[in-house]
Image (cartoon, rainbow, N blue to C red; front, side):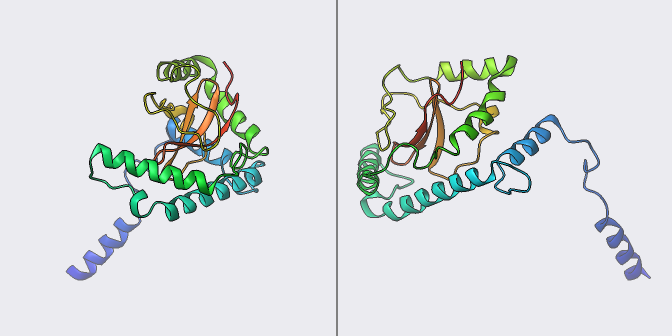
Length: 208
């Protein structure tokens, strides 16, 4: 009887809902769900799926290339000296620049996907929350004219890497390491943080 009783209780508990499962989704949950729909590569739920799928494919190809090049003297180490870190970045950057010597703006941010990114960013930069996001971008901005908007250009070492507000990151397709979004002025760029290189960019991605 004890065994039977235990099995009955186990079966009952297995069907129990997790704590909070019946609660209504929060505003953050709703925003995340809406963002996932807008950045989905499933054409059944997103009219921009084809452009975003091509963007993801090109990002993945870059990351695969990066992993191949980040070997030997160009392989980042978790624990090392500042001089070694700089030497590794320099070696890796040189390899990436040589491999992508013919790369140009629009190779990853294709002409088809650029308006998609502008549409994704625009609603998040309106209203009070948008003003707050713009204030964060302004506070973290590098000095005017210091960042070269050129594929394969080095991001200046002595300038801050502006933090992209979470409200904006939430709306954009996720990037795999070592790639990160950065917004400088009105322009959106992808930065290879391991090599400190500009991978691609969209001019006037946001409106003031």
